[in-house]
Image 1: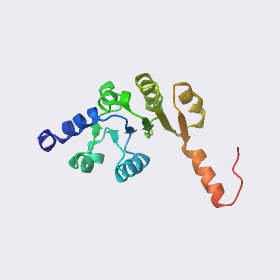
Image 2: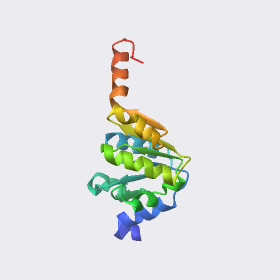
Image 3: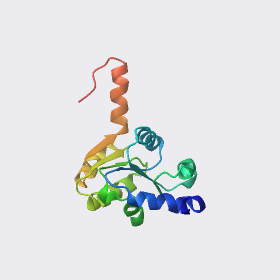
Image 4: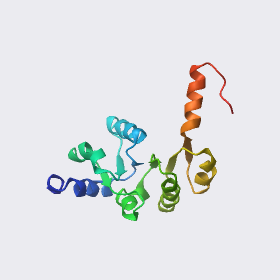
Length: 155
């Protein structure tokens, strides 16, 4: 009944109960693709996204979504990060990614923590804060472009 009258709270309540799941932070292009994949493969997930407009369709379907700024401590706890098997940070804000990496690792020492990073020079910082894997958009793109050109990728 709560879901019908207050879908944001209903979806948040659902998110709190999920365990051994994936948490996607940010409904960016990458985040949307991840959510689509997880949904299509019936894998448990929670999405944290601040912009309600971006996730209205998912809210209507009753998906486990926390509509909040991911930097708010309640957002991570409501997504049950402490019980997650993996967390993927897809947001574009570098400072927020750094803060989130530390907070997520403090909440869950054992999960796979993947952080998308636009600034290669911050890779070591993110790793030192607990990121299991840092995905550099530019390094990934150059590798794919060079492969298409049949050129050797730099090491």
